[in-house]
Structures are given as structure tokens and as C-alpha cells.
Picture 1 (cartoon, rainbow, N blue to C red):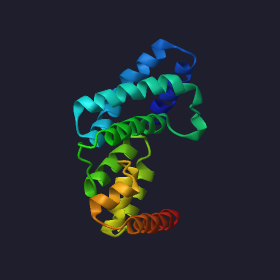
Picture 2 (picture 1 turned 45 degrees about the horizontal axis):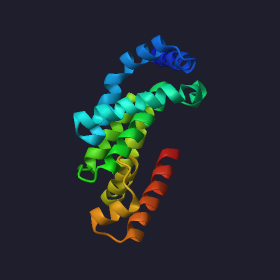
Picture 3 (picture 1 turned 90 degrees about the horizontal axis):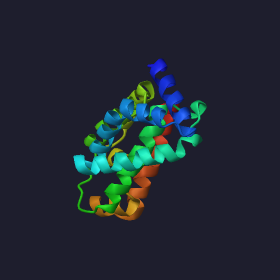
Picture 4 (picture 1 turned 45 degrees about the vertical axis):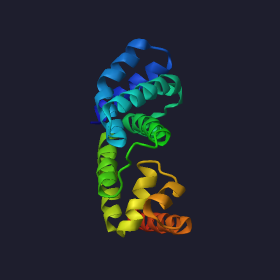
Length: 179
């Protein structure tokens, strides 16, 4: 796994210099994973493909900003893909956003794809310890990018209650992860 991550980091670094062959190799090695991550967020193949295409344009343009010391290459790329998918989700109010345990599965898949399986497992365990309302609110906000206002409408709860659920849940997560 470490060798694979080093190889991907090298491809990103070569992409930053404008090396099209390195970018092509990076795409071929990572696109299926990135497409899977986008599809889990968006729920539709066509929109996932569009989000991934946009993400790879961003990867090409931002490759010079990648630093090995700041994170695994798949984590960096997954973040870009996830943000593009969330942007599409926000732009399409008719798309259904999952919450709760579905979001927990998406989060687990994303962390595993990013090469952070130990951290992902710890996060998942800590999330499972939260009360259901806090867990749903946190996952909907951080996995699917829902705003506090959207969560308030979806859950039929006051905005302040939603904000409190997220804040208390994040405090509990921090304590659990620090333990």
C-alpha cells in the first residue's frame, strides 16, 4: 500500500510539471475508485462521471499544490472528487441525499479508499457511539455537504437545535478520537 501511495504521489508531482503521460497514468490507476466515491455521493452514474471529469481537471490544475507530507495522494484526490460531487448535489435540489447509516457507509468507503483505514475505522467506531440525531446531522453535513438550513428543513427541527446537535456531536467525536 505504501509503495502504491508513493507511486501515486510521484505521478501527481510529475503532473504538476505538465507531464501528460503521468497524468494519464494517474487517471488510469485512480479513476475507478474516484468514480465509485462520486457515485456513492450522487447516486447516479452520469452525474458521477461529470463530477469526476471536473475533479480531474482540478487535479491537473492543482497538482503543484500537492505535498506528500500533508497527506496521502488518494486522500487529496478523494477530497477534490467529493467536493465536486457535493457541488453537483447542491446544484441539483431534486437529487435525494441519504442520511444516517447510508452516510456512515459512504464515509467508511471514502476513508478506506483514501488509504486511511485505521483512522477511518476509529472514526466510524466513534460515530457509532453518538446518538442517532447527532450522527445523522454530522454525516449529512460532512459527507453530503448539507447546510444547517437544509438539515433543519429535512429533520423538521429548529436551526438552533441542528447546530447544537452538530456541535455536541463534534465535541463527543473529538473526545472519543483523542482517547
